[in-house]
Image (cartoon, rainbow, N blue to C red; front, side, top):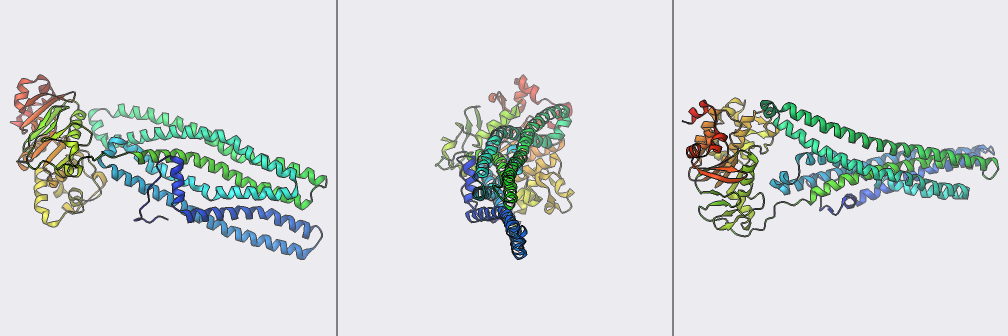
Amino acid sequence: MIDAYEEPGEPDRRGGGRYLWWLVRCQPGRSLAGAVLGSVWMVLLAATPYLLSRAIDEGLEPGDYPALTGWTAALFAVGVFNAWLGVMRHRTMTRVRMDANFRTVKVVVAQAVRLGAALQRRVGSGEVVTIGVGDVQTISQSLTVVGPGVGAVVAYLVVAGLLLSISPLIASVVLLGIPLIVVLVGPLLARLQGAEAEYRERQGVLTARIADLAGGLRVLNGLGGKGLFADAFHRDSQHLRRQGYRVGAVTSWVQALGVGLPTLFLAVVTWLAARLAAQGAISIGELVSVYGYVAVLVGPVAFWVECGYQISRGLVAARRVVHFLRLQPLADTGTRDAPAGAAVLHDPESSVRVAPGRLTALACARPSDATTVVDRLGRYVPSGTTWGDTPLDRIALHQIRQHILVADHEADLFAGTLREAVGGGLFRADEDAHLTQAIHTAAAEDIVQALPKGLDSTIDAQARNLSGGQRQRVRLVRALLAGPEILLAVEPTSALDAHTEARVAQRLKEARQGRTTVVTTTSPLVLDHADTVYYLVDGKVAAAGRHRELLDSEPGYRALVARDAEAEEVVR
């Protein structure tokens, strides 16, 4: 089984089937062992009727008790050995499935890390969750075909050969009947793939919506929109349930035919063998062995149907994994160095010009428009943005990341101590002064004081044990502690009360004096401290100037940022 620190290898991204085959090729010895153990196990199941027929014909019927004892002992020995083989086969196939499971998890996690910031822009969070929770397990289960699936084919051929030595007629019926059963189930498997694929698509969408609702439930409740989103979620969940019923209907037919058709086939062959025994064409022992052989064949046929079902679902899951693995991060084609001195950051699409060493604010009615501008300025999407005289996409990406930091107000927070959450695992004790300054700038002293162990207190993943405003300030502390030359902060104070927001706005300007800072906001408490405010309409600059100038000259801007008299009084 793959080691926790072992490289998973380069997955085959050419298709779902090739990805499954890659998982088999990654563990050739174990896969071969599973196939051999499964084959021997099933063949020895077929040996039981043969030994039973010998015990009847050579021991019981003529009254030869020593022969009967010998064949009985052989039957017991084969049964015990086959039980041990069954245990080893199951252990081996469990390891095969676990290796496929962990290997897929590792390549998916590695791909998520490789995509980095582009992950959320390329695929929904619900899709990643569904891959990790459902698809990985489905893929691992489909590898059952490596062991029992191969064994079923071998057992089928061995039993057909044994039946041929008894009666060519019965052998012909078996050789033609078993493939006919598989052919009858085939169309259902194709239909199952289509139904399963649609179900998985809807499941991914619904999972993403659950994550969005969980993250924004408090805001939705405050805006009175909880009922509206609950109704939409209810409708989507009902659609998913109906699609699940369709998948279940096809699955039930597959499983019913997988058990019913082999049983019906067993009855037909048994009737035919009994007719031959009554006519004297075969002996009583051979009649018993024929029944045993066909009964044994029910197992391989059920395995074939089950493997077909698992492979059908596995292909759907593998295609989704392959689609995720094919996603590419933002191309790093830049070769130039970042500007040596202060330089203007210019987005020609919106006409935003970020002057160096100043606090610039972006205000617009749709927050997504301002976020899009920030993404272009931070080079998270292709654009014509320039830094100084150099197009941003011609500068080496690692240099951009060293100088420009985009601080999202919903950025991930990992579980650990508060100190680790804001400073990372590389934080040094001698940086406490910088940390204290960043905490003061973000007005986060009360957070540290309220926690039982201060900075060494443990916080949950995404800081769920903190309030929304506390989480936002923790994220701002982390961004300030990084000390970027250019800080692009998305709604850094949207979850704060007016008093705290005013303190953060004032301290942020003082702490970032001489360095470039851009904030997206519609808060007059923050806008009043900005050196330049860009008022955006449909993602483009409609007006620019100081906050109070725009209040007097731009009715749209005034309507956008105007708040109650108390807030305006705090500004003054």
